[in-house]
Image 1: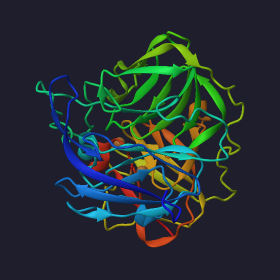
Image 2: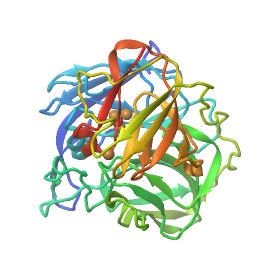
Image 3: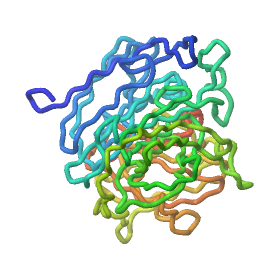
Image 4: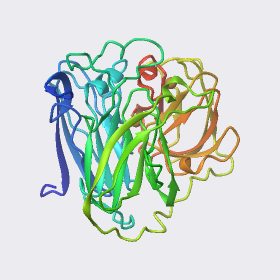
Length: 423
Ligand code: C2O
Ligand code: CU
Ligand code: CU
């Protein structure tokens, strides 16, 4: 924080070389380092000013996924940064505690730029939040999950990322950019901030020994109360915060188990080990589990709330693909609306920029408890129908749109995206 009370961050998007597989180097991109970027952290009410310098040889952008920012600061496809260019967004954080993230968003190239390694987490703290583990790297640990494929020489195989219809699923797992990661924990209770930063793959995260844990937050906010779960499903772009208890000397694997039911999409299949965890022989004791996490319940649409329908096809939304020059929806600032997402095709995800939403129902039934927190991205199964209660920000801007899109990045790149203005 500088003397004027503004939190300043300098982010250099750059090319580098990363050793994922022992003794082998891969050409990668990263933010300040060679792969992925620093975790940014600021508090509700802070003014943040970020200097993003593009030192890669392609135009790109940096989008604050989950952050409620004025549209010109959003970092979407209209805020491209040319090679050697600099972009300096600035905003005041005005939203509850959350694990948000940043990633590039150049239209048609997002999957590749994220795959090369530009992504990171942006944690929002809130003085009103309850007492939860928050010692970064000790009992508050981000876990960014990705699924590259490596060539025999240890480089990232990019060949499939910009091809095909369904998007790329890799055969290896990286957590925080590390292949076959091992984590030593020294606390009896650890908060993991899970982020699915993969292009297409869906994970169901849990533990090899079946231990249960507590879900405390979804994409953009804490739940009302901790929810005991055995697995958490994360489609691309989604986050979850969980509290996990360890006993001294524990050895356990964080893993992902694929969907086995007949209707499961290929991106939901496959079992993976994510992270080997070894607990120390002596662990810092855990504070009591808070019974209440936040007062904010689900968003309740007012009577007569405007309803908009979004029909998802193979790669279209409402029969159209992305046109940078077309505004698809115009929403009044501060409005709460019902967005009905009706999937007539295979699995997609639905993400809306600059908002939080509650899932009202899935196929007409109340959502699973895991979907009851505040979200910005949601998995939409084949032929699924979801209704979302969406609250839009107060920043009116008749010129600069926000995006809504499928967060399967290959779908987004092929045009499964629309634009809305908040006026
Ligand atoms: Cu993760 Cu349009 O964003
Ligand atoms: Cu976003
Ligand atoms: Cu999709």
